[in-house]
Image (cartoon, each protein chain N blue to C red):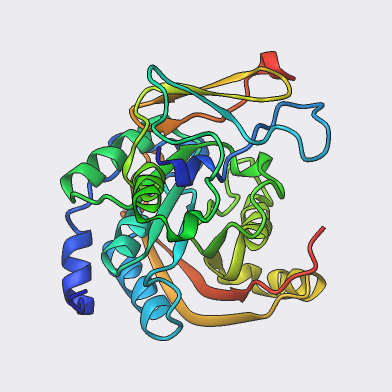
Length: 91
Length: 214
């Protein structure tokens, strides 16, 4: 799962507020190499753009989980595939 | 990007591994390489809706349409399917073909509603037709696809449902164009099929995604 794909996903746990369930928190072993906020004038910073491109399109999360920011429900990522299916327990 | 000929595309797609044990209730069957190649070729050459575009494949199964899109130069492809076994085959296909711009998500298309609105340029699909206690599922796929797409949705539907779809398209204020009439010869992939293969008439349709969908 690339970061680009992650950006499309949201949680469908029933009972969330409108617009809730997004963004899903990525839980991994190691921290990201990017600063938490874009630096000022980032468009001109070649090095920064290279790192963003790398994280967005070249890094694949193979194992980990995505956590719903509202319900705390975790969706597993296995072999690069996030599983957003809800179970009977979620209803 | 080397220009791929239709025959070359079809040849490549014949290498795509398909379902080992298709699940009856999910209406699983692989999109035939010939049909997939013709569909994708039209989408690419006539409408330019694949190259460098972000493409979604709803009900991707083993990934026939996604892989074909990637080969025609899609910027990025995401396949969505409910079945882990199919996605596992899709994953191994992606590795065999050494594709780096294809991802997949396991989810239930019927429960996505509008959570991914306007996230893809193009949506392509061969949806379940609703023949296995899941009547209406093709329309749910279509509606969701239309919400997800910025430009167009390309889909396959039984010709017998054409009028119903036209009505819905008008209701959703979406333009619909039947690009081709196909014959699916579904091989007897399920044990209960009496004949060797069944011929179904299928429309290949393009829907423009300008919408007023709630």
